[in-house]
Image (cartoon, rainbow, N blue to C red; front, side, top):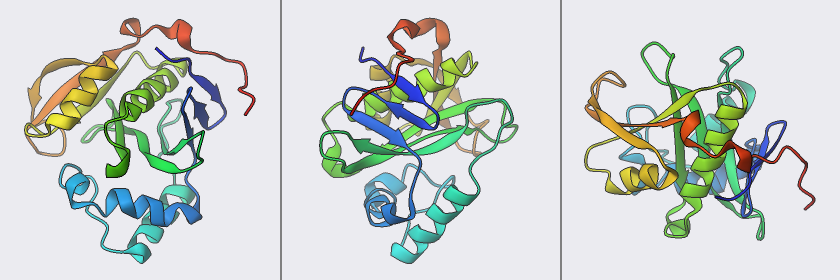
Length: 194
């Protein structure tokens, strides 16, 4: 497992920096959220972005009105490769509907970044963040035919706990990661010099 460093809103691993979104990220974000291959797994939580203007508007909302759960680690991050400073994807810790009690760990990568273990690394980083901020468990919800999403959840170390229609009014596979299942000693509280 790679060490994770958390400094304010930035989460850093050996290869990735999860940082707040910026308005200039819109074109890269559109490569993720404008992709039919990705968006089909995200609806109804997020519809496919149809163009740069729509993506800019969504990013603006994410930046100016971040998810707020008092005392809980909800948020949205741009996932950036440290070596190249290229945007690789998006990560989230968000309350699951309808009650918002359960937290969903989510991540989407640009298709050009698939197959390099970045989703696993980002998922570990987000789990570390949640657990370092007092959460005892996080969930991933995956549509039954989304084999890529299910594999990524398992690679992170999440346990399949069954299917439900509790979230989003859809039949979904549920994966859970408990704090006790993660080697929290890999969390490095010291700043990373880059």
